[in-house]
Length: 129
Image (cartoon, rainbow, N blue to C red; front, side, top):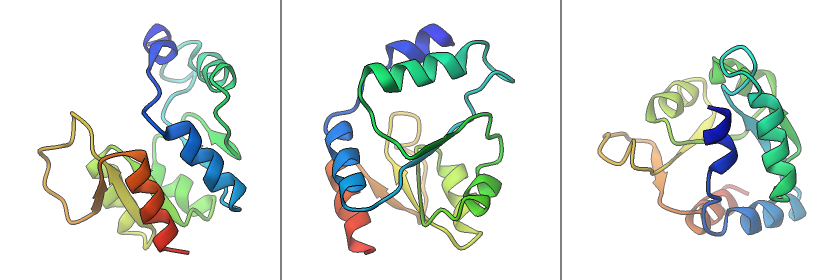
């Protein structure tokens, strides 16, 4: 898994949108199930990847097997994920969620707002300010 984590391609406009969001006062909290409990060396690989690609973030939460709890504990306003199930569960707690459409979820039906790319995501987040 470490090898897979280190070779992921950054989605188009992701870095730029994250920078603009941070510059506009948003906190970017990365919540991931990646972590030493599940994948050896994944913490080091993930942090190194973010550093090497100059991807900014406010905080990272690793080993998060229950994103509902992590979102509540960290006062998340908007949760973005490519897991429809995760978005639906987090949404049930009253937190706005957005599904980032991907190959693994494009055919899964949901009432949760979907975005197809980072520019759409940025527009959606800015609508909520």
